[in-house]
Amino acid sequence: MIEVREFSGLGGFRNEWLNAHHHFSFGGYRDPTRMGFGHLRVWNDDEIAPGTGFDPHPHRDMEIVTYVREGAITHMDNLGNEGRTEAGDVQVMHAGTGIVHAEYNREDVPTRLFQIWIEPDRRGVKPGWSAREFPKAGDGLSVFASGRPADADSGALPLHADAAVLAGTLRTGETARLPLAKGRKLYLVPVTGTVTVNGVTAHARDGVAVGDETEITIVANETAELVAVEVAG
Image 1 (spheres, rainbow, N blue to C red):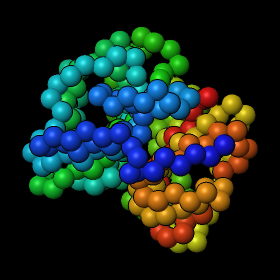
Image 2: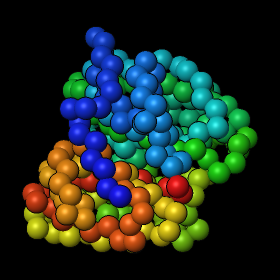
Image 3: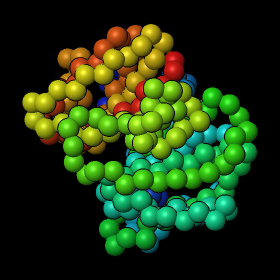
Image 4: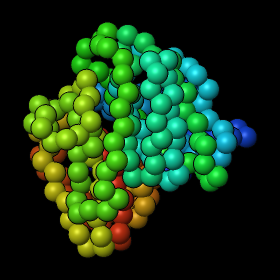
């Protein structure tokens, strides 16, 4: 099963500082057929104007991953964490028993990012935050964050979920192959470029929902930056 969710058909919200597109139901956008995908609950495509951002607000019992595509985001929370994550890098927040955080674009240019929420395997974990720099270029897809046992020693940021966040760049004509075990799902979004996923074409910022496949073959029709999340179904 492969379903392409075209960027033009996503839900949306816009005000004077935020231009958001929602792959799944979120905030004022609700589609009963798009309440998530397996344990993936939220995938927001956000553009945040310079000098603005999300004021302090709470979360509980969710693994929240931020992948910065352009610009940078500055995080602060009530645990005393503060850090700046820039394009190509990733941050992970464990909401657990409760955390209050803010996210600001302190840059002179718009910040564009993906905000991804994954349901944890268990509730009530200790809240926390971490971020990591990753190489800005590379072949294929690398694991950026994971709670899968097989990735325990990969250097990826930890998740309290049997899931993995992968990202990377495929140059024109390059191919990446990913196995997909029974009962697993994968949701993939090209940041830039056009790809085929098992022969199905997806353009920049489209969502590709994959299930009931044993292997995923991704071919770059043009150089493409990709972000993908693999979760239990």
